Image (tube, rainbow, N blue to C red):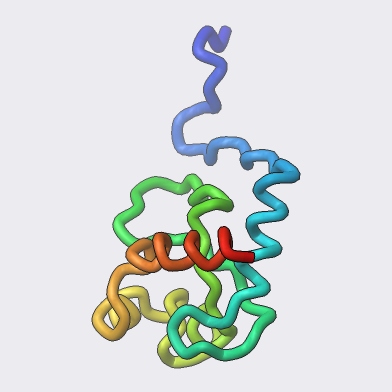
Length: 106
């Protein structure tokens, strides 16, 4: 019997349900230019990954706008080499205050 209502060890936590508020936030993040190179939107909403442990994805409110080259496809893409990305641009979560300011201005 599962008294704590938690999944067995080694399994991922259930995905968080998207709320109307989180969907609206993601839409606004995607409407911003890339935070690194200012490539025009639409951007990918990158969920921050630096200094995170575990398998749970960051909140939809912890996202930054990245072009495809800085997100997944280019040699400087964070998902190709997080170490190189951090060396070049810093930790991704450090951009969150700037993004939040821009999102609130929309």
